[in-house]
Length: 159
Image (tube, rainbow, N blue to C red; front, side, top):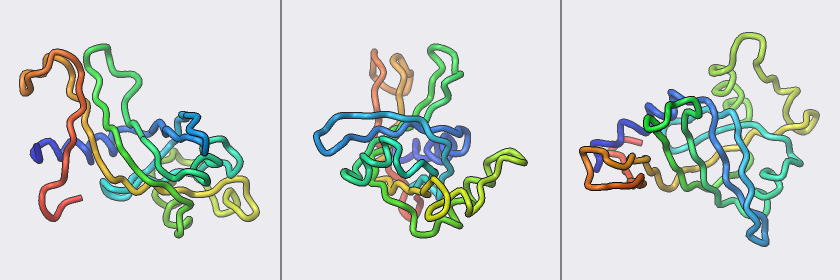
């Protein structure tokens, strides 16, 4: 349902944290929350410590899953965006920092000194391959009793 696509950029803009799902080379899963910024609807950026478990996992296995949601939503009022993506260190860390800093409060901005090679973190990006929306059980627009995920695609020329 392409008419649902408008929810994707809205959810990316309305939320600040994403949960990254990664796995190591043996398939052992790991999830972690990160502060993120979106580059359009098809790419997310964040910074993480180079030696964090999810960063090590991404170095071995770049495929990942991401969930964006508001953890303060009341029960029955949740909205969520599920993403399938491939991640890597960002090739333009300065641009990634600019996107992140635009979302950070004054005085909390990141600098180039926070990033490798002198700093402890790397800027990462995830290239999104598929977008899914949470459809709550009983949603009058759908014939579903339980919560479901709906694959959504951009209208021609959007993204």
